[in-house]
Length: 330
Image (cartoon, rainbow, N blue to C red; front, side, top):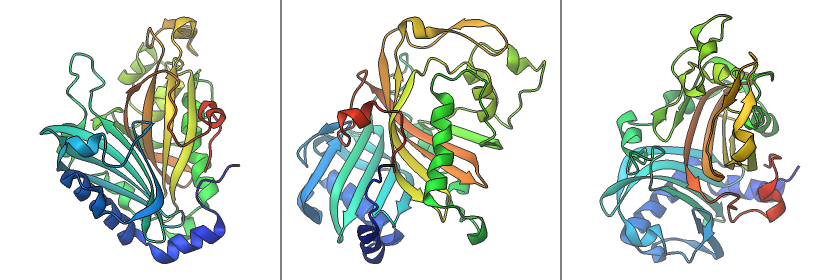
């Protein structure tokens, strides 16, 4: 297993020097500096690295030049053990709402790593300016369940937390509907770019109307969508980097890429014997950050922010081999 940023000695140092309030404070300081277009406001490590949408840039370039204000949606996910924090939020770019993912790695109270995803285009081609930012702001804040602490007796190890969340990616990749999806809680729900992607309590009863659907999006719950086999067109979920593992709150956060190879991968057979052709008609990839709330070995909540990027793109934080691998790393 490749461990990202959690060597025992450095983990202890991060924990001693920057708790949750400290990590969240760095996020606020960073966002204020971006709006001011002034990186000199930040305490930076000598060799700080910065990426935006998978591209390594000079700090102060890209969104730093165009950000005009902070938005109202804020979701902080902290990992004091690793000295990392991930922020899902909204911003304004030349007055236009955009969604932002920000990861900061803090070492000795200085910012050592900065990774960002700026969602400027919507998922719906007919509504390209609907980035999800306005939908996030209508939600007001993250699902309260993400913020609830797990009773100490029920907390699991960092490894177990990551393994449970990773079952989601393994179950979706080339999904055939025949796997063991018991890792989903019956009340599991998912939000994608501010929009509800599930529609209630999970059910896949024999003979139900859900079984006759030809679109996984029409199905009610997380488990039912996987049981349908209709997600098969997601051909690979790679570069699975779990960067936040918060055992106190049961939150796991990963950066990943969802590949759609198109071509002959679009035609497949569902568990009920139906032949379906679905998914993108040309190869492309989602660049994504996805958060999971895990309790008692099951996923209860999922939230994702993502946008379309060139097929096979790298994150800027992995070797080529790791970027192409579907093995999880943490």
